[in-house]
Length: 46
Picture (cartoon, rainbow, N blue to C red):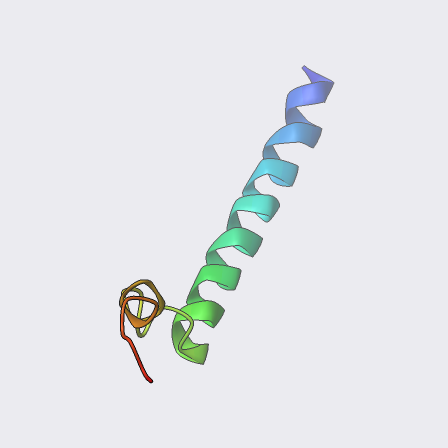
């Protein structure tokens, strides 16, 4: 039972850190143009 009192807060902390990293990436514009690089390689710029 002591293991649960240690592991549950650690799991919640890691989940909160992952959620914070996701929101930081959203705010930083990491997901603004997901198809741009995939389509850019098909353009022929001679």
